[in-house]
Length: 157
Image 1: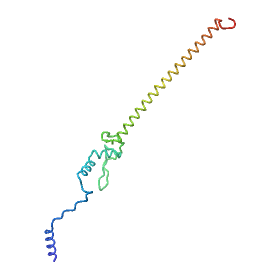
Image 2 (image 1 turned 180 degrees about the horizontal axis):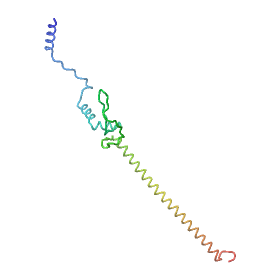
Image 3 (image 1 turned 60 degrees about the horizontal axis):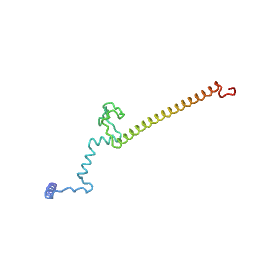
Image 4 (image 1 turned 90 degrees about the horizontal axis):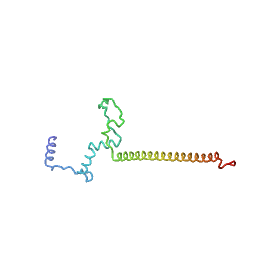
């Protein structure tokens, strides 16, 4: 009886047309554009850019975990982020922020130089005015003294 069932099953399987798996719904179908997008996102430069965007930095001295034991091979050393600057991939936003900061520093430096120049000019002007006032005072004192000694302006003269 068992043999008859197996024979019947095999004969029905051979006689039945081959089944074609149902195609996935249209929105889930793999399309060349989606495959290309997935490949682009998985490309090493894109992974490096996204890792840098998240703040991840390469470690020149990594440590490894042995699975399943969990043994650590090597000395785990934290990175500061500037060990290998050539491997840090910056996003356009990071580049723009750095450029803006650089521009702001240059503008601040120029403003400080201009303020210093302005202060020096004001100091020179103040000194010149002070010197002119001293000279005028000296001239005025000289006139008063000369008149007093020559007797031109006094009551005895």
